[in-house]
Amino acid sequence: MKSHEVPPTPVGRIVDRHGRHANRLLQVLIEVQDDSGWLSPAVITEIARELSIPRSRVEGVAGFYQFLHTRPVGRYHLLFADNITERMQGSAELMAALCSKLWVEPGKVSEDGLVSIDTTSCIGMGDQGPALLVNGRPLTRLSHQRVNQIAELVRRETPIEQWPAEFFRVDDNIHRRDALLGLDMAPGAALRAAIGAGRAAWMTQLEASNLRGRGGAGFTTAVKWMACRDAAGADKVVVCNADEGEPGTFKDRVLLNSMADAVFEGMTLAAWAVGASEGYLYLRGEYRYLLPALQDTLALRRAQNLLGRGILGEAGFDFDIDIHLGAGAYVCGEETALLESLEGKRGTPRIRPPFPVTHGYLGRPTVVNNVETLAKTCLIALHGGEAFAATGTAQSTGTKLLSISGDCAHPGIYEYPFGVAVERVLEDCGASDIQAVQVGGAAGVTLAGYEFHRRIAFEDVPTAGAFMVFDSSRDLFDVARNFVDFFAHESCGFCTPCRIGTALLKKAMTKLAEGHGAKMDLADIEWINRLLRNASHCGLGAAAANPVVDTLLKFRPTYEQRLKSLDFEPAFDLDAALAAARRASGRDDAAAHLADRAPGS
View 1 (cartoon, rainbow, N blue to C red):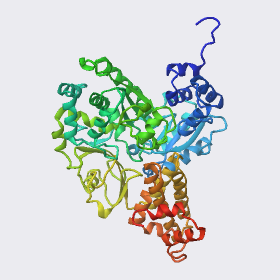
View 2 (spheres, rainbow, N blue to C red):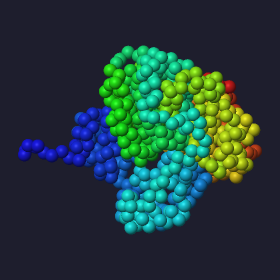
View 3 (spheres, one colour):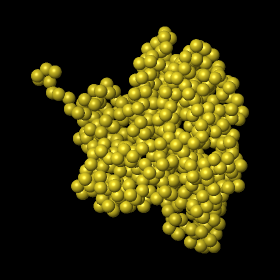
View 4 (cartoon, helix red, strand yellow):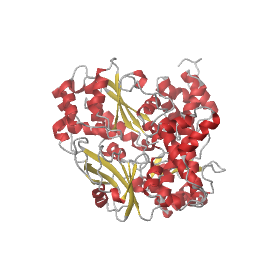
């Protein structure tokens, strides 16, 4: 550096490390916050200047993600998981106890700036909760004794690195292995098989497998890959969606921890099929503790010529993987919102079409697949598509990983061939006296006891992997209310129906919980559901009322017992009310239009 040059600031050095690319904004914000503790107005201004982008964009991104702080937080920042399973395990009482011991109010910073305590959504530790994040690191198996120890460590200002290692132990808790979890594969074995077969033959095997996406939507993987392969443009991209934010799901955490090679190999298999040269693993902020080990795995794969230029000696097969961190936003699990986040923006879902396979990351053809989906492709490369399709059902081939939590003796990960009955799963995990099972997380379906003969499969009960168990002691209203609070908190706010609808739903559930509800409120919930389903911009809003609608249908007494009076108001006739509103206003009401075209109206 010349004597007259001004040395770069810490922010400038971080921006330099990211090539001064605006699409790296989220990663820059995360690193700057690591350095400074929070994102002050001055820091936000400096980032905008260094990246040559409007300050409003930087502030907008910083304000979107829960793990980015535009106001100071404590030097010890503790976030208790507020998922329903942790609540059942006593997390609320433990949080209150810690707040009392440290003289701090929830959601606020202590007067000396030492500590702040708040809640967050599911952090993927439902099999070993109650759990919390302390400065981003997961701390499991909370108890009153452990809370006392934490309070003492904080009061003494003990560095987190010196806290007992047992506090941070995260187990895989694998209780049933099948094809994937039982896979013993040397790194590169699946890739060698696919390269040896050739691109066309490899795609033929994938097509024969009928592999469907394991992220919940169930789209056929071969169709997605072929669309990307055939799309115009040479700079194709492969993205692994590791933003496992659905409450009650933690299977991807286990795959990333114990089978990272298979995940990265699956991404490389996708790159071989579609002709991609660039890959990204989008890692949810709650799993940041896995980042060092994942980076080590990538470095080893580069050293083994499994990544980089001329992979395994195949001329022209150049592909590498970078890891991008999320920062606490459930909506980024939706593939287009994930791509927006990957580009350094707010995680707002895109309007489709165009689809990511033709216009994805930075407008380039992009394949986005779930962690489990990509790992499963290794089985196809090694054993062939027909062998893969021989397991499961005709429409749901292969196996499925289930994340089991709640009222059972053995919570953890179970792998089953598709088609397994819910009652078999309950028996295996040691569940008894079960009232209901929530399959697929908050956005999934609530199954009552008379439905336990149903099967886990796309044609019956589809799931991204969550399997939450509730025995007869649980109040299903409280379960549904927790999910409603989750959706209201996680709505990105982009579209009015979801932003307002989830807030109205939360208000209705709160009114019922406080004993002030009437029959009109139950009718309003059904109307809000129709509005959300018909007018929401993305799947978050469309699914937000699912747990309430399901429990209203199957466990209605738990709602009716909260009504102020069952006979206080007449039954609400939605169609008649909407017709009267239209007549009174002399115009077509938008809400009426939505209701009129809703299914069954």
